[in-house]
Amino acid sequence: MDTHDRTAQHIKDSLDTKNLAECLTPTGRFSYCALCATSLSCLYKDHVHNEFKLDCLRILCNHLKLMLQLRTMQEMASCELPLDAKVYVRSLKKEEVLKDGLMIIVQDLLLLAISNGTYDARWRVLILYVTRIFDLDLNIVDNFELQVVNCLSNFLPAQTEQEQADAARRNNISKTKRFAMIGLASVGGGILIGLTGGLAAPLIGSGLASVLGSSAIFGAIGTIGGSAVIGSLFGVAGASLTGYKMHKRVGDIEEFQFHKLSTDTETGDVHLHITIVISGWLSDERESSYIQPWEYLRDSPEQYYLRYESSYLLELGKAMDYFLSFAVSVAVQESLKYTVLSGLMAAIAWPAGILGLSSVIDNPWGVCCRRSAQVGKQLADTLLTHSHGNRPVTLIGYSLGARVIYYCLREMSQREKCHGIVQNAILIGTPCTRNSSEWNKITQVVAGRVVNAYCRSDWLLKFLYRTLSMQANGVAGLEAVQSSNDRIENIDLTSIVSGHFDYPQKLSEILMFIGINVDESAKLKHQIISTQSMPEGMCEKLNINVSIRFKYEILISVYTKKVYFSTN
Image 1 (cartoon, helix red, strand yellow):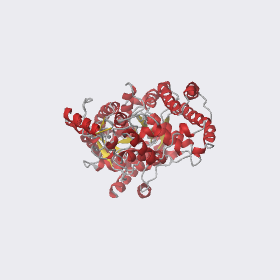
Image 2 (spheres, rainbow, N blue to C red; image 1 turned 90 degrees about the vertical axis):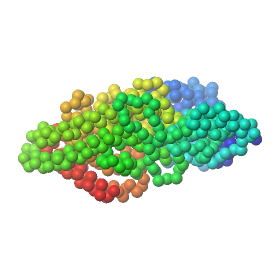
Image 3 (tube, one colour; image 1 turned 120 degrees about the vertical axis):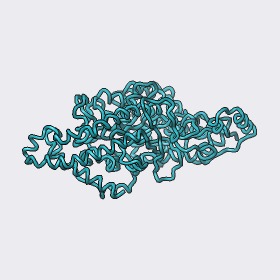
Image 4 (tube, helix red, strand yellow; image 1 turned 135 degrees about the vertical axis):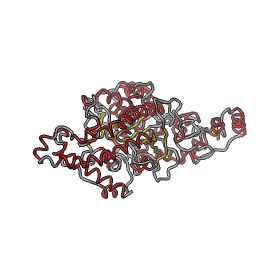
């Protein structure tokens, strides 16, 4: 038995996979493929995804021996009014091989998705969509992905004499330290490649890097892979993204580094999808200022936070704290000038005391806005060059961190081969335009969810954009993005946060509200620091009740910050 066969057998034994092309009846095979075609029709209506849909259907039809049905599947995937997917689900449930459940279909799809060494984000969205149609827990996708990774990391077939000779030859011709490390060993004639794609700690000599030479997982579904395939999937860099260096600096960026965000789970160093989070400002110089808001996030077993322009974000944080403390006294003084009724009618302009202090925050805010846009373009370059390998990426950010994501996606939309990289984009309290045409471009880049989470009572964001031209279209962090594109999810956070200052300490609660996985222990903490927002009736129009609401919202923000930092 050669290396290919030994590894393929190991995958089959470990994952208990089945060749559905042989196990399903002709009706079952058609239903499986038609279900995916119908799902693609629902998920990707934009013409920019036509090539992906065709490639996806080719792989499916070839796998299920339905190439004669490819044109039919194409028509189903392009149908504006697709058939009810439940029809195909009922048909699949009649199959003998699926009598114990439909999870086998999900597993089969995952193995197909990575068979060419590229885990396209649109494939993962399709897999999750099908899982949802089956009424299965979405966590089974994460669990099976971990099984695949663990299976690869626990198997190292013995090398033949020829393979050892090949390895020695490659070591001799290695010209750099990086490629010398990559060439330390080989399996099945392929080089031993670090799987981390520049994101996790190097795994040369252990873990996933142990099995990169053979077709391994792809043998389980009858495809042909090899070290090049898996190297493509996870990347070929020997260093980690935590050691990522900018090869081409964008603008005046001084700091741009990725750091591992612990998940407190023993799932290994790499995973088949990753999450990158981006904070909006810093309260102090400690590393915990980056980590603390995200400590309960569990979106992926492999998570990173972006450390960028720390000195400027810290200066902004100090300016925001000073501005807030001064605004409290001004708000109290201003509120004493009016009765409730006269205040609601007369408080159209910002209090003079607040306007007099505007220079304290306007300058650092403007600097950080410009730099965050440049950082966004740098992030786009990082993703487009696949420093993380060819795996789906979810981006989550609040405040200026959300602005980084916005400019990242906008930059990607202007480049070639920008699709299939970003799975989800979660933008919270975003200080950028809500121009629908710009947001529609973003939806073309993102395979899954595009979330604009906003707060109608965010008086600070309203103040900061009081004189800018962006007011013509509005600010995304203050209201919904109006678009004919149904891909944009507008989520009102006014019931959770009272203003911009609340985002870091309320982040876990916000993520739960949006539908992002967080640690269960976060619920207890929310009960400790949770505060009520102003009554909805008083939050309708910021520009007609500034003085009255200003007082209460600032005091709530101050109280929340005190409770948050006292409990941490």
